[in-house]
Length: 97
Image 1 (tube, rainbow, N blue to C red):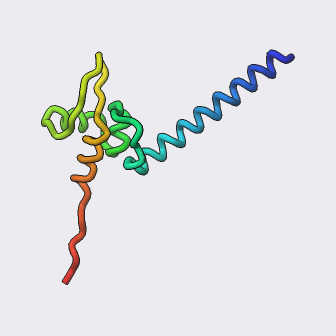
Image 2 (cartoon, helix red, strand yellow):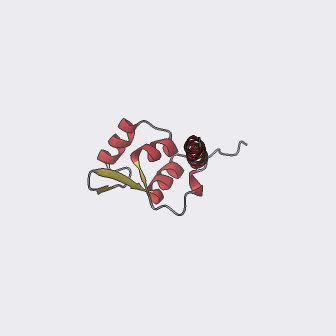
């Protein structure tokens, strides 16, 4: 009986960690400027931050619009580059008058 209790406890701890991670990812996607401790993000995270599809970030990479590095078989994007691109796409309103 205690084994079942241990398994349930372990599952609950795992669920809490997944929920915590999920909320952190959601927060980072809403506020990409809060990412400071990490220097690089993977393609999936970069796409979430920029709110674009993977094919578009691939095209941006090919055109040289966004910096990236290749670590073994994985493509990583510097946070600075992602934030710079996001800032360059921000529309500024001009005062009327």
